[in-house]
Image (tube, rainbow, N blue to C red):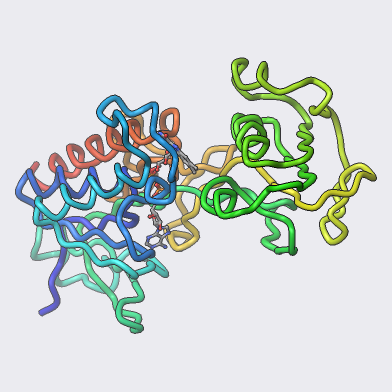
Length: 308
Ligand SMILES: Cc1cc2nc3c(=O)[nH]c(=O)nc-3n(C[C@H](O)[C@H](O)[C@H](O)COP(=O)(O)OP(=O)(O)OC[C@H]3O[C@@H](n4cnc5c(N)ncnc54)[C@H](O)[C@@H]3O)c2cc1C
C-alpha cells in the first residue's frame, strides 16, 4: 500500500524548511518537495550579506541557505530536490474507504515530477510554501526580451554594468537599492522610472533627484526605450506575486492583492488541511525570519489537527 505522509510541504525555502524541521521534531513524518536543485529558496540565490537576520552576522543569503540545508539534514526530514509539484487535488472522493477507516483520512493527492516521472503522493495535510516570482513587465505576460532583466537577484549580480546606460522600472526598495548597486558596478548612467515612490526613505535619500522620474511612463522593450530615451539595459523591479498555480483545483480563497488568504492563528487556507506560509501568503512582512516563524505556526496547527 502506498505510503501516506502526515504532511507534504511544497517548497524548501525558509518557510518550508522551518515547517519540516518542526514537524519532524514533533514526531511526524513530513515530506518536503523542492522544484530546484537546492534548499534555501530565495536565500540560496542571494549572494549579498544578510544584514537583517539576527543570527547571520557576516553571512550571505547563500550561507544562510547552507545552514538551513544542514539543519534539515540533521533533523532527518525526508526531502526530494528537483521535484516540482504539478497539481494538488482533494483525495477524499477517490479514497472513501481509507477515509472512513482513518480518522484523518487520506486527504490530498500531490502530483510531482520525480526522476522524470509524474507520480502521485498521498498526504493528510499539505503546506504551500512556494514563495513568489517577480512580476513581469506586462501583467500576466511572461515574455522575455534581450537586454530586459525581470526581478532582482542573481541575474543582476551576473551582469557586467561597465559603461552601460540603465533604466530601472519600479518605485519600491528594490529599484532604489539596485540603483546604488549598479552605479557601484560601473554603470555610466542609471535612471529610475516609478509611477509612485514606495521605497524606504533612507534608500530614496541616497539617489540624486535628477535620476528619478516619477509618473506614468512608456516602455518599448524590443528597442529598450523608456519615455523616448534609449538604454543598453532595462531592469524591471515590479515586486512579486504568489506562485501556486498547482493548487488551482482546490479553489482556495485569495486576497485582493493576489496572495493566498489564511487564518491568522493557524496559517490554514480556506481548504481545511491545506496551509500556506511564507511569501506565497504574505502573512507578515516578507523576510527570512518571518518565513521561519510562519513554518512554526503551520507545524503547530498541523500537530493539533493530527493529534486532536
Ligand atoms: C535578492 C534578494 C535578497 C534578499 N535579502 C534578504 C535578506 O538579506 N534578509 C531577509 O530576511 N530576506 C531577504 N530576502 C527575502 C527572503 O529571501 C524571502 O523573504 C524568503 O526567502 C521567503 O521565503 P519563502 O520560504 O516564503 O519562499 P522562497 O524563499 O521563495 O522559497 C520558495 C521555494 O519553493 C520552491 N517552489 C516553487 N514552486 C514549486 C513547485 N511547484 N514545486 C516545488 N517547489 C516549488 C522554490 O524553488 C523555492 O525554493 C531577499 C530576497 C531577494 C530576492
